[in-house]
Amino acid sequence: MYSQIKNPKMYLMIFSDGLIFALSIVVSYLLRFEFSLSPFYIQQIKTVLLWIIPLKVIVFIFSGIYRGMWRYTSIRDFWLLARACLLSTLLILAIILYISGFKGYSRSIFFMDSVLTFLLIGGKLMLIRSYYSGFANPGIKEELFPKVAYKNVLIIGAGAAGEKILREIFENNQLHYRVIGFIDDDPQKKGRSIHGVPVLGNLGKITSIVQSEEIKEILIAIPSAKGDQIRNIVETCKDCDVSYKILPGMGELIDGRVSIKVLRDISYEDLLGRPPVKLDNTGIRGYLKGKTVLITGCGGSIGSELCRQVIKYQPNYLVLLDASEMNLFNIQMELQNESNFHQCEAILGQVQNELLMEDIFKKYKPQIVFHAAAYKHVPMLEKNPWEAVFNNIIGSRIVMEMSVKYHVERFVLVSTDKAVRPINVMGASKRVTELIMQSLQ
Image 1 (cartoon, rainbow, N blue to C red):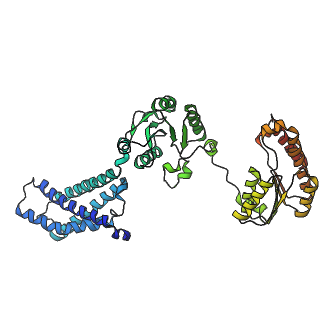
Image 2 (cartoon, rainbow, N blue to C red; image 1 turned 60 degrees about the horizontal axis):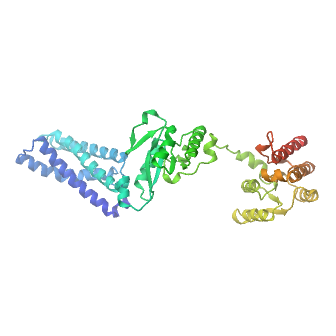
Image 3 (spheres, rainbow, N blue to C red; image 1 turned 135 degrees about the vertical axis):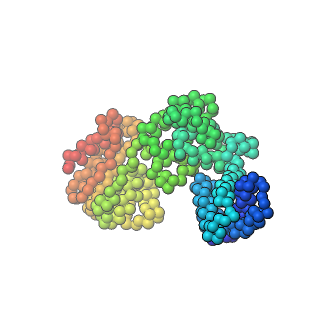
């Protein structure tokens, strides 16, 4: 509240409210006595205004009425206003009762004054809100910005999240969206509207609506939707050949801030239909902290991510092995310069090189091995099957045998879903690798 003292707009609001307080009292007297006031009541009006106006201003200040940003007036602000009106009326009645026992005063005047105060000040707040929301009407937007190209969009989900997205589109002049309507499977919502935008129907009508209304983008605003529901919606959107974005799940919106800014492309987590698996960080730290870790294929997509995750658990030393000079250099520089992890050694070589692997295990004595070195591109290996055998099978066998020979505590083989009933060379090579590992256990 103290920061508001320097705000000249607050004093303008207090002044306007003071005028409303005076008008409310006068109108209440006029209504009570049917617009015929005797000199006694005219003098009474002058007397009560001298202390009622300051009293109401004080009550409104301490009720928090002037703390809000009036352009964002909400239902909560109207509840605060109602509370302030009721409290000020009770104080007025208590003061009059104490001073005069209501002799010469009409109680109904002050109840009418409370209602009129609420209506007049509430109306003023609505005018301010409407003024700043003047661009909310798409027609007004297009008249003011005729050269702006507006994108026709549909919102899937006529619930609370969809309403908030619509409101932000209306109020943000930088968002050049024209919301054509909502799509919702709830039959009770069909034909109804939200802020003047109709609910056009269910998912089955998306295709016809997209074609007839020239829809360019679909916004999915159902944060509570399950994986199978999202998959159905995505398939429908794909059939319509339009772009689409999704509002994150409720876990990502726990602070309640639903915004157009958090709309994003569909991710695998949306389609998964379950929350991501929580890692047992305590258990993982127990067998990585203070250990020497060897990661083969450390420069690949999986190996490099393993490096980033492993260093979080404070290993004593990290041995990096990769056949690609560039990939090896990149991950080493990332660990040292970006993650500030310097307890690592980069070794350029191939896992098929048995002498090299012997030297690595003898010199560094790794306690944990993550074997991620493998060829994984299916079409490439179909044309070069012996390379899959040489790298994925023979190379993996050498690493496993060295791990057994040098008493490695834990060996983790990175495999693939293509190893399940394999139908290609890559999947078959990884399946053989899994069988070799099982035979050495």
